[in-house]
Image (cartoon, rainbow, N blue to C red; front, side, top):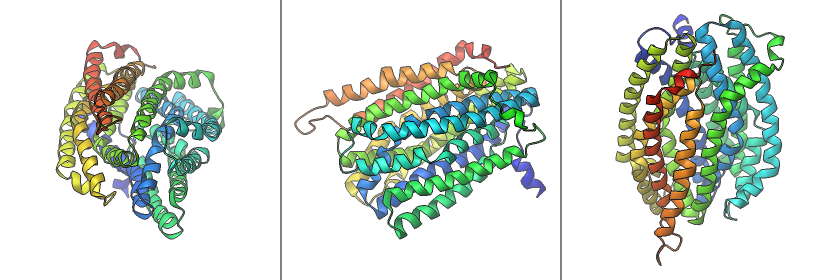
Length: 459
């Protein structure tokens, strides 16, 4: 029992070997991200196998719209994580409690706003995206259930980041694992047994994510060693709401930029037909696992940077940036190689259509070099965010997506038009993505070297 408690205890990242602390923190996050990815992957596998390729395309096509409408939660969670990490590093219990209380209240308000917004905008968005008539009703049903009644998704997103800001990456992993197992069971029951199709997948997700959010809340309320939440801490405080917004809004906008670019490119993707839409879904599901080391270490670097910035250990921040970046580069290279070696088997999990498997493998090979560049960008941008600089990652997102990726996708599609390919080559979508990732890595190095992020501490 004692060893289990030690695993669940927050990690103090202001002492000890930087790379070891980052790795210890990132590993549970990595496993947690695998569990998170299983949510979407199991949804796709179940509907693809039990309903068909059109249902698979429907679940995947709903993704860009969903990501756009949850950017508020991304912003709050990022702002919360940075503030919690810095106040934790500074050992400031009262400000820590005020931050967490205001995050919980703000999340509820934003969840209601998103539910209302989704109710009125989901269908127009799908029409704007040229979503095929064969799947648009399924897409709409899936999104309305996920966005209008899934408060658990919002609260797990924020509360898990609060725990990580405290240095606890193990608890979100455990809670998410419980939720993922429940999601798999409910997916199979609702779809295979009850025949609810795409709607059943959405309902299973709502139930399972609500369970994980509740477990996170219980864990936070028991962290009395670091803070004690009282009713006064839940009273909206303009200073803390403003700080959360100023830190989180750029990250939310960054996510919105990515989501909008996905929506614009999704329109191009949809024009290539249902086969390519389904291939895109498969590639993105496999891609979701390949990028897990990058995302996990990026978040770990944010917490590491935040705690050490709060403790004013700036030399330690830079040392961790170097060690963490080299570590994630090695791990990502191994993951990319494994996916390329076993691509046929991986793609075959989702479908038995040979043409669809071959197309998916070809697209995955195109974007594979970009994963190495993403390892660098996620690591260094994570350091900047933790230090309080959330504007620089926003600029990187704007440059790589709005200025580069979206125009390049349409340009490549245009210049590859022919009698055989009247709309252009579908691979244009993935070539533009790979180029954007490489540019993101180069820009992250440039901005990190400039060092302006060191002047952005919240404290």
